[in-house]
Amino acid sequence: MIDSLIFDLDGTLWDATEMICKTWNIILNEYPQVKRDPITVEELTHCMGLQLDDIGRKLFPGTAEHLRTELMDKCCALECEYLARFGGNLYPKLEETLKYLSGKYRLFVVSNCQEGYIESFFEGHNLGLYFTDYLSAGETGLSKGENNRLIIERNKLKSPVYVGDTQGDKQSADDAGIPFVYAAYGFGTPNGYDYIIHKFSELADIF
Image (cartoon, rainbow, N blue to C red; front, side, top):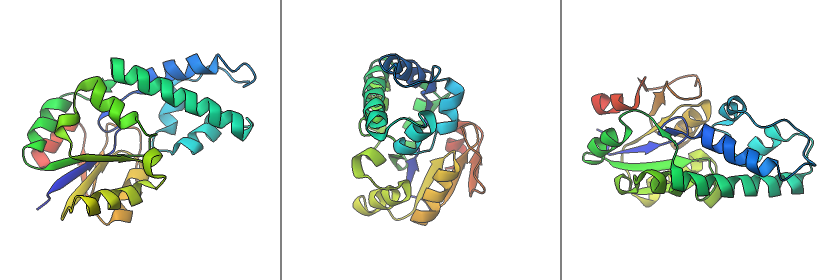
């Protein structure tokens, strides 16, 4: 009997790649010394699930570390500003499913994103009321598995599951010793799972 669900964000609750792409290219235009074409949605899709330092190295290879850090900081700040104002693309029936689940379980978000990104998701769509707690890699500097364990410990969870879409999400569930629900509509193809959903609303059928 589970008592809680911990969610990944990108590829699980929403797809914000179009807005992220737009804002990152705004910042990239301010850095003519960074020699690359505009960032594409497809490129960002392949970065989902990675930590920000790894995304920066993937998108801006050969760029000096101090410049890459500055660039990524500005990209992340602008994306959070835009997402808090305009939101991203929520998956179908997301809010009604969250409302149903929150009536039965405690809900959480653990993501590899920067600090402020989860808050932008909440603010852009007024969804914070459904969640008890959340953690990001930007806030703690820890891996997703470690953040899962921290959420479990500080909220005294007895039987949580993790819902995500990438191999990193599967690994984070394994690291925390909890079952993994694979969101097959997302960005990744993990090497195993305990449950699988092909649309977000199917969580209401499983749990």
